[in-house]
Image 1 (tube, rainbow, N blue to C red):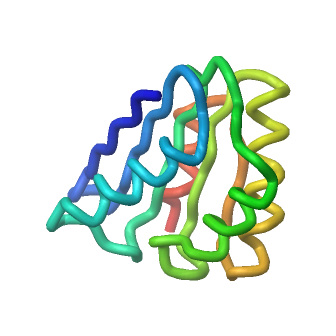
Image 2 (image 1 turned 90 degrees about the horizontal axis):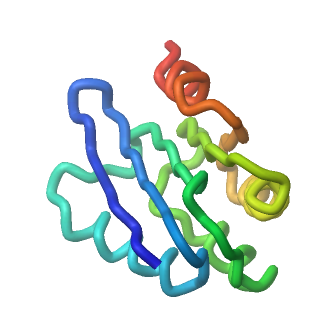
Length: 121
């Protein structure tokens, strides 16, 4: 599954884009990409765009594990952008698990609305 990571320093924003099959390997690859980029910081706001995901192959325990080990600092705004109910269900499960780690995650179906929310002061 391809995953790309872009950092917009001016807006203090991390944008992750997933496509194809969404699985634990993709999530781990995103982590590896992030820690290799010097500009990455856990206090940047973030958008995870999963609208191009066609298949979800991730277990609930994988979501629980990764949500408890987020690279993002607690309380930092994060948005997940989805385009269908399958993606929404996966995002909602991740959101619920992440709340226990103090994460502030909202789910959107529109990328620009997600951007406005994460970058609002």
